[in-house]
Length: 413
Ligand code: FAD
Ligand code: PYC
Image (cartoon, rainbow, N blue to C red; front, side, top):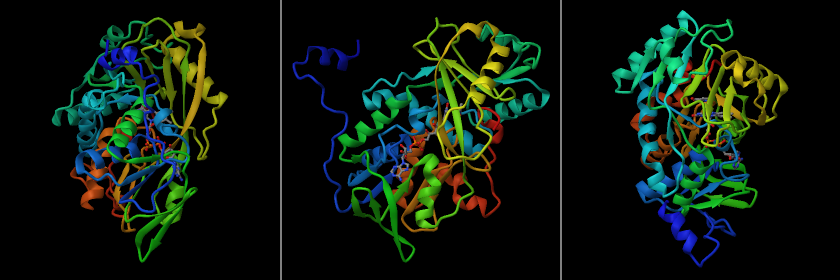
């Protein structure tokens, strides 16, 4: 039994203290203001305080922490990317994930499952080989395996996918894992709070004061704050914040939906992704099947679920696993994915002095939470991009120097 739980059971001081201090007022000034209390904003605050000793920091969250995409994702963690920039960046994140529960003294239910990206065509098999070679070059454990290895890992699969799209092989990535997503926000939030960072929930940023090309302050729903540095980490709301500082990016926002089934007995250990069928599945520790598909095909700033998605996803799922036909769907939801044209994030400085961006995380930013927090904290402190994020600058779009990660996106988008 974890020591903290035992201590809690015998404690006379019920209930336990709240996870975060509730600050009645905003201070008039902070060294750094972080917009967005998702995993990325909270992680940046945590590493600012922990690794750089910068504690006069506030995180402003318009709703509740982890209520954005951080609490809506399907929690897949992996580093089997395609570009050298991506592989090295996500590999560092996977390393950080492994120590995070200990670091927070909070169980994140980090579970190493192994990750299979299925190939149903020669073209996708070629991309898997390419990814495997780049991965191996950077010391990341990925290899192409045949259909028999997929069958061994997931015996219930119909390798012919009901005759529609036979599985020819897969990219197997042993480090592929899942974790409890909202606990990640709580862990970073509590750790930042314990180090003096202020977290203000229900506090919306309404405007950013820029004078002479420099950030001077932030207008919030609870008053004005002066600050020389603002980090914007608001995922699907990024274009609204960018309008406040007149910074242009090629971001476009599409809903990404997911669903879970009722809990069933454990039958699926690894994470399975089919880029060609545009679906993926894993089984949670509680037995629920966590499933998703590609982006909704229209640009809309909304988190509405659709019947079309549920029908499309379940049809492909039944092609792969016909025995699931009687399993009930429990919940369905959506998040707003901030997509870039090259499927890599936008991280670092902007043309406005003191205004930093951490966005473009689209469908793949949960796994990056630790490394994005660490590298953004470094970038804010040194006012120069951390070496791991130089491939993700905003200027790459102007310089035609894209970091093309589309071939490593989880499902075709
Ligand atoms: P968020 O968690 O969205 O946080 C941004 C916060 O900003 C929100 O809480 C919002 O309320 C707040 N905010 C917005 N505007 C304002 C304002 N004006 N003032 C104050 N606060 C504001 N990634 C993976 O790596 N693996 C996966 O398996 C995976 N699956 C996904 C499945 C789905 C269905 C979705 C939607 C996404 C998935 N992702 C996945 C992507 C991942 O969830 C995101 O990239 C990541 O969570 C982004 O984190 P964030 O902290 O940047 O944003
Ligand atoms: O990035 O691995 C991923 C992922 C899976 C589903 C959505 N994103």
